[in-house]
Length: 313
Ligand code: UDP
Image 1 (cartoon, rainbow, N blue to C red):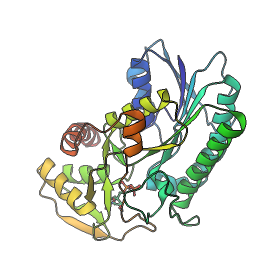
Image 2: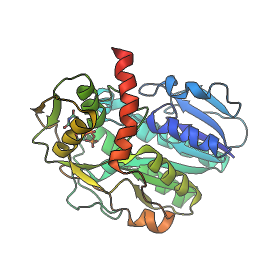
Image 3: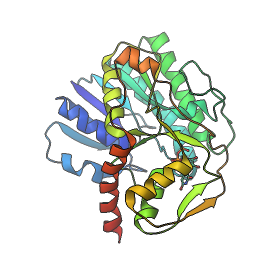
Image 4: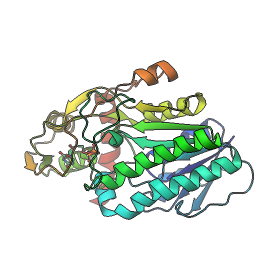
C-alpha cells in the first residue's frame, strides 16, 4: 500500500504518517509547511518507507508510480491560523482539494477528505448529526475555513458521483494531543501554556460555550477505520463528552496545580456556542468510539507541553 498524506507535517497529519507506517504502508508526505513543521517528522527521517515532498497542493502534483490512498489533510486548522492565512485556507480547501481529487482519479486511489465540525457553523441542532446542514456565516472571519471545507465536501461528493472516485469524508471535531503547537491559538495549548508559565488563563466570553475534546490516538484510529470502510457519506469523529470552556479551564488549573487566575476576554466573532458530535454513525459503520477519557488524554498532553514550555524558557 502506498499512501499520500497532504498536510502530513501538521499535528494530525504527522500522527497519520506514524499510523500508516505502523500498518506497513509506504507514506509520502506532502506539505508546504505554512503551519506544519518538519520537527513533527524528524523521527521518520531514516525510515525507508517514508518520504517528504515540500509542495503546495494548490499547484498540481505529479507522483510517479502507483498510489493506493490519498488523505487530504492540508489546511490551516486553528482559528488564529486561518485568520492569519485566509487566502491560503480558501485555496487549499478548493484548489488543493481539486488537485488531490484529480490525482486520486488518475491513480485510481481511494481518497479521504479531512472535513470539520466547522461545516455546522454556530449550530442550531445539538448534538450535531451528519444530516444537519449547518448554520455558517459565509462572510464572517471564520467563513474562509468553513466555506472552504463545505466546498471541499461538495467537490468530493461530485468526484464520487460523477467520476466514480472512491471517496470518504471525515468531519473532525476538536482534537488534542502531542505535537500541537504551543502558539497555535487553540484553547488547549493557550490554557496549558499559560498555566505552566504561571500566567493568567484567557477565557473568551463568559466561558459558557461548550466543546467536546477528542484525544488524537482515538481520532487517528477512527480515520484508519473509515478509510477501510466502504462508506461515502460524511462521518463525524470526535469525543461526545462535552464541557464548558470555563470548566475546562478549571480542569487545567487542577491538573497542572497552577495558581493562575482566569481573565475574561471578548468572545471572537461567530464563535460557536455549543459543539458536540453525534457519533452514532461512526459507532454503527466503523464500530468506533473514543477510548481515552479527558483526564487521561490531558495528562499525556501535559507532559508534552511541559517539555515545550521548558524548550522556550
Ligand atoms: N478559547 C478561550 N481561550 C483561549 C482560546 C480559545 O476561551 O485562549 C475559546 C474559544 O473562544 C472557543 C473555544 O475556546 O469558544 C475553543 O476554541 P479553539 O480556538 O480551540 O477552537 P474552535 O473550537 O473555536 O475551533
